[in-house]
Image 1 (cartoon, rainbow, N blue to C red):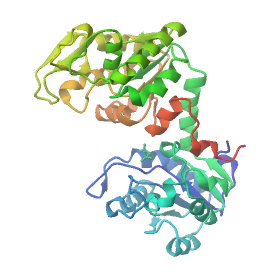
Image 2 (cartoon, rainbow, N blue to C red):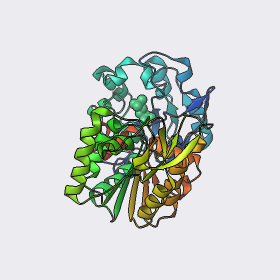
Image 3 (cartoon, protein in one colour):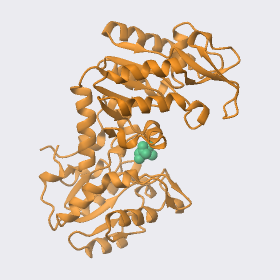
Image 4 (cartoon, rainbow, N blue to C red):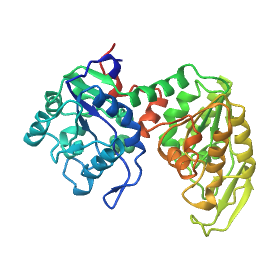
Amino acid sequence: KQTIKDIDVKGKKVFCRVDFNVPMKDGEVTDDTRIKAALPTIQYLSDQGAKVILASHLGRPGGEVVEELRMDAVAKRLSDLISKTVIKTDQVYGDEVNQAVSQLEDGDLLLIENVRFEAGETKNDPQLAKEFASLVDFYVNDAFGAAHRAHASTAGIAEHVPSAAGFLLEKELDVLGKALSDPNRPFTAIVGGAKVKDKIGVIDNLLDKVDNLIIGGGLAYTFVKALGHEVGKSLLEEDKIEVAKEYMQKAKDKGVNFVMPVDVVVADDFSNDANTQIVAIDQIPADLEALDIGPKTREKYADIVKDSKLVIWNGPMGVFELEVFANGTKAVADALSKTEGYTVIGGGDSAAAVEKFDYADQMDHISTGGGASLEFMEGKELPGVSVLTDK
Ligand code: 3PG
């Protein structure tokens, strides 16, 4: 695929799709990681003398104007971060946008309104895609976090103007792509999170690639059940027990070390005030719920991570939002921070956990994609990438 280095943008108008879908509270941006991650591309386009028209979605307004989901606070934060005026329109397209675009000078930045205020965005309406394309000479996609969506501003537009990948998109694809196609070994994947359902594709694909597959989080208990143990009140997906068995068999057939918790923290309540105890994995009491991995498991997982040359982590080990069930997730973050191997955090909750427990600086790559990095790890093609112009 072309990257922005391959196109000459001087004096040209560029539609740059970014993922500014950031957490907000009371009209303020509470985490600007994604805005910061897009800065190299925005700065480069501006420095090269492009007229930059930025676009993003924010939340899921469902094709209507939702006042709290306007992009004004985002434009303000971007402007502060890049020390440059960011013009903001209240329209996604139309007269106001045309007017603003026509007045842009080389290097100027404009952010249009939340693209999901238009119903055509998520429908990938060709009319809206053409509308976007008609504004510009080039399309640049730097929205890795939204690259798994085939929407008008992430995919449709690229059918009408020459396009290229931005630096963030390029970096995410390089890191994740290299990890999956040519990994340093031993290669360890840690898959956690609440549901087997959400991770089926990832586990399946990773079993073809890794040396160790470590399981944790709520989804582990379906595997525990598949091994023939009782799980008490822990999360269990009855309809996924067979799949869990198949994966354990696949791991055996492929020579993958399939690593399960050996002990867990069980509790009588889903709260910080719960009475907790540590039990062996085959001793979960019928009336209690497992909400974190136990100390022996933490040690076991840390040992494997220590000896790995590449670790990919997606999904927490327990209910890390509650202090009493955060130790497993913390221990994994800590182990990743200490290994000499290359560490990749696959976005979403694990990225939030690494941030929360202050390990972000010690990771080699934290993906800005939640769903996008999951789909990439499933081996799926991302529509926002496949549409881009080839070199
Ligand atoms: C994300 O936050 O994962 C991306 O911005 C995509 O958002 P979406 O799931 O609403 O499409």
